[in-house]
Length: 296
Length: 282
Image 1 (cartoon, rainbow over the protein chains, first blue to last red):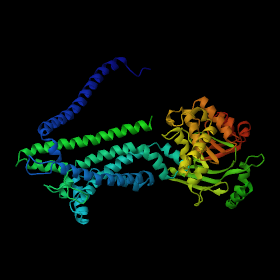
Image 2 (cartoon, rainbow over the protein chains, first blue to last red):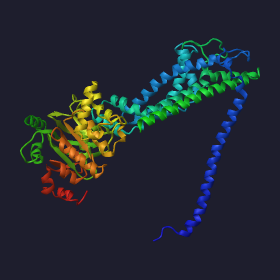
Image 3 (cartoon, chains in turn green, purple):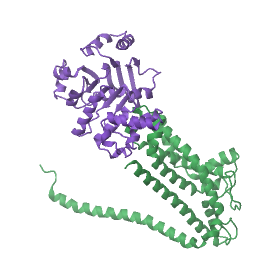
Image 4 (cartoon, helix red, strand yellow):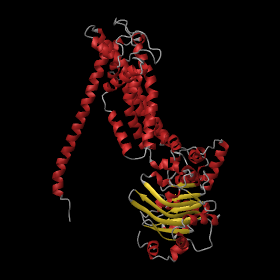
């Protein structure tokens, strides 16, 4: 009995090899497209904006005069925003995920909750802006201050944080939690001493990526009414503020009136991209470091 | 103690004919102290009836082997003894298990407490991704021991009792994953010994080990029975024969025969036991 007819196999193999080559080229062009576009974007922004970046640009207050305008206010605003978003998201994101994954019983409730949270991750950011406007700015009468903006952005990135944390927790082999239960650990002890230390690199990576999404977000902040031109620096979470992407947005809008604003916007984009790059690098480094420590 | 345990067991089952069954299943020799008594133990995974009325007396300071083909409920039974089986969703049990005369399903019994007295070693060595030292110290630490000197002492003693000390004493702070498979399994045993349980449940502890490591673990089990009660599930009939004092043969969620290991292997009363221990099926 011969299952494979060598003649046919040979004939087929030519076609298979051609298909393999085509597949390789398709995947190559798909990659090339993205890389080219990104390169164009970066070259264009750098060529347009690099010359405005100097010490004054980074440290000056905002001004209508393009010569004097600086982005210190927006940088501080972004930092203050992180000071609200990071702890709020970490706390609610991590504990929600732990509750769902570790404490909730398997069943309908759990799957309904998980599915809905995953779906919330896909809700357009402007909708969160409207929620923030209704609840924090008007409902709690916070006004358009750092706290209101921060809570709004926390809501926006909570679903992704919860989902990535859930995945990180699920990835921990159950035989390790069983080992902890097997010597009399309570659930929380097993979570704190075994599950969390192992899941932390993944959780932190997801968290930092979510954070970088939050600080690049514009639409929800437009909705809650971040001021167009804000001269004073924010000094606490109860101050009015602006952030880098908002500044980019307004300068781009006004570049019709004052052509130099376009360069200022490009310069601000470079600063924002740099901050995001640093955040993402941190995520990668954390992951590497913990992985080495855990799985030597 | 024995009398008391039996009284409670019988009081609890007055309504049925458990007493006669108890006589049948109890080993014939001079009665020894029982540490576990299960009575009419049924267990269901959802609709699946996994344990069908298990009545067993497990002797203190002895090695009891549980043998039987795959899917016969032997691992389930083992995990029921420290209520680890409850981690599986949709598990339901009826009947009773007495541990030192106390029902383990009593609301006053905390599973954490029970699992401290009834430790468990798993099929696959599952050390924590921590150092050798931290693995052994884990149990005492979660039970509140903070004293560094005391922890050092416990770690050394547990590793010695697990025949591992000489191999690791110079590298206690190395990562546990650097140990060989057999060493990892003995580390897991040491981790269990560190909480000073009365009973150690072992779920096929050598099935993933090479013959040499298996032999070491078997020697270890022999030496442990002076201080501990050991209940071991095994697929390996020779192993059950070599190391156990008593053997229970499980089939389809029922105990076919429970007796001294010599009797089970040499003159079993049930023909199914005979067929199984002689390799006719399984």
